[in-house]
Image 1 (cartoon, rainbow, N blue to C red):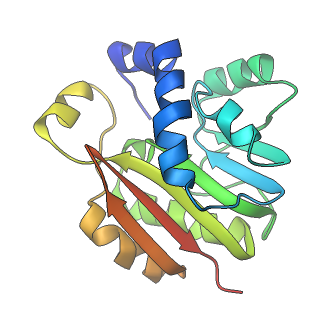
Image 2 (cartoon, one colour; image 1 turned 120 degrees about the horizontal axis):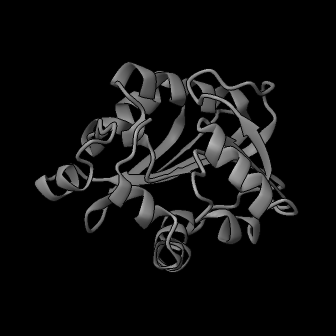
Length: 189
């Protein structure tokens, strides 16, 4: 996963933390119970840790970037268990979490097949009845411009439900908003 310098500065800013805490996380998590044990895929700089920690007894972050993982361990030692790893092959046991979430990171997964691997892995680590939810940006010229030099493979919102169903999820809902989409799916009981 590559991120340009502008993108890195934005993602670690207090302004981005405020936006995620007051806009993105509440919009995505509306009517969703994270349960006791939640996993965030790709927490990055940790913008979502505080609002997610308020919603789950236990929060784990799976981070592919070792520098960001080390930063998360230092910054959120009391609130987040950090696991180094790739979301397309999670080093986590089957059925460990009540919920799996990811926010504005799916487009950083380098290919659609790898994104599908991430969906399959999210299903695998969820307990029966568990929820997989998140958000990502809608493809547009401005979105592409913000990601110059980044790994940027947008997920088409109109194909996401089918892709999640192929992975084995049910109860799938995908909704578009201003420049973003949110999704929710469940592991069958």
